Amino acid sequence: MQFRLVGLSGIGRVFIFRQFYKGPKEKGGVFMSVYNKPLPAQVKGTVTKEYWEALKEGKFKFQKCDNCNTSIFYPRVVCPSCMSEKLSWKEASGKGEIYSYTVVYKAINPAFKEDLPYTVGLIDLAEGIRVMGNIIGTDDPESLKVGQAVKIEFSKVTDDFTFPVFRVVEEANQS
Amino acid sequence: MSIKGKAAIVGVAETDSWYTPELSPMDMMAITAKRALDEAGIDKSEVDGLFSASAYYYMSTLSLGEYLGIVPRYTDSTTIGGSSFVSHLLHAAAAISAGLCNVALICYGSSQRSDAGKLVSMSEQNPFEDPFGSLYPISSYALATRRHMAQYGTTSEQLAEVAVAARKWAMKNPKAWKREPLTVQDVLNSPLISSPLRKLDCCLVTDGGGAVVLTSAERARTLKQKPVYLNGAGESHFHRGISMMPDLTETAAKVSGESAFKMAGVDRSDIDLLMLYDAFTINVILFLEDLGFCAKGEGGPFVSEGRIAPGGQLAVNTNGGGLSNSHPGMLGIFLIVEAVRQLRGEAGERQLSKCDVALVHGNGGTLSSQVTAILSKEPS
Image (spheres, chains in turn purple, green):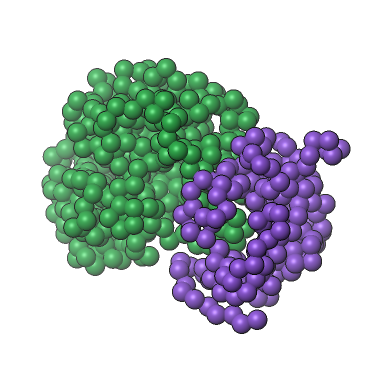
C-alpha cells in the first residue's frame, strides 16, 4: 500500500489517499480509491495508540484509574479525577444507549455528501463513559429516541483506522 | 480585593456594515479602534493595554500593536472562542485595578462573509469527533438541543420564538443584516441542517469588527462619554469538545453567572437588558436557565409568547443579536457595544425606557467557555 500525504489543511489535518474498503454504507460497502474524510493525526507511540489499535481488533478499550476507579475516555496519561498516573486498560461490553443525536442534512466537507443524511450520536456506554460515533441500522433516523439501546460495531475505513459505530438494537432483542 | 466598579467602558465602535470586502480583519480592528478612542477622547499614545482574539491572527495583539503602532505594557490575546472579548473586559479591569495598565483597548475583526461565506476557524482537530462528520459547530449545539427537548419537552416552536424575537428587535435596528418580518412558521419551514436545528435556528454569517476602550473609574469620570462601569464579571468552562460536556443541558454559565452576580451584588430583577450570545436559538434558552432567569428546563416556555421580544417582560438582544443583526464568527464584542449604547441611552428606536444595569453573556467553542459581565451606569 502506498501512502501519499496531500495538503495539510488546518492543524494536524492529514488526508491519506489510498485504496480502501469503505465501511459505513451499510448493506455491503463499496470499493473506492480515496478516503478523504478526516482521520486522526498519526498517533505514533502515544497513549491513544492502544485505543486505535484495539479498535482494529474489534475491541473498544477505555481506561480505569487504579487509584479512584474513575472510568476515563478519551485516553489520558493522568486521571482527570485524582491525577493518578496508574491507569489500566479495560474492554467495554459495547452496550450503551443514546444520550443525544443529530441527523446531518448538509455536508460542509464534500467527503460526507454521499452519506447524507447521516446520524451522529453521543453514546453512553454501560461502563460509564460517553463516546461520539455514527448511529446505523435505521431507515428513519429522526425516529430514534434518546435513551434507546445501541450496540457497538466496528467499521474499518483504512488499514490504519477502524472506527466504532453504533447499531440500534431492535426492541424485541433488548434485554 | 474586588474589581467591582474599578474600571469603566469609555468608548465603543463597530464597523458601519456587515459586508465589507474592502476591509481586512485587521483593517476593521484599526478603524474601530480609532473611532472608539475618538469617542472616548483618548489619544492612541495613552493605550498601554492591548486585548484581542481572532480566527485570522494567531498572535492577534502582536499584529494589532504592530499595525497601530502601539507598544503595550500589558498584552492579552486570550482566545476562548466568541466569548473572548467579554473575558477581555474582566482581564482588563483586573489589570487596570492592579496598576498594570491604564487604558485598555479591546479589538475584533472578521471578514468571514467576504472570505468564505462560512465559519472561519483555527480549531484544532478532534480525533474523537471529526471522523464522524459532526458539523463544527452546528452539530454540537444540535446535540444539546435534542437532549434538552428529550429531557424537558422543549419544542421547535419554542426555539423559533427566540429567532422571531431577535428579528423583531432587528427590525428596530437600521443596521441589522436581516430586517424582513419573520414568523415561527417561517423558522419551522426552513431546512434542517443538523436536526433538530434548522437554518433559521442558526446565526448569520457576516463580516464585522468592533472595539471597546476601558480605563479606571476615576479617569472615566473626566472623559467625554458617560462611563459604563464593570460591576461584576465571571468566567468558566467545563469542556472543549461537545462529547466531553458533562451534561448537555447545563453550561458553565451557571458558574460564570454566579461569580458575576456575587461580585456586582445585584439580583436578577435588577437587570434591565440581557445580551446573550445567540449563535443558535438553543443558546438563549440555556443561558436564561443557567444565569437564573428561569428554572432549569423552563427556558422553552419562558421565551414563548413574546416575552423576550420588543414589548415583552425581559429585553434580550435588542440589536437583533447574532441571529438577525450580525455574526462574524465571534459575537462577544457586539454584545458589549449594544449594552453600552443602551446604558448610555443611544439606541435610537430600540432604546429601552429604563436601562440602568445590563448583563452581557459570552459563549465560546461548543457551549464551552462562558463569560458573564454586569455593566452599570453607576459604579456600585
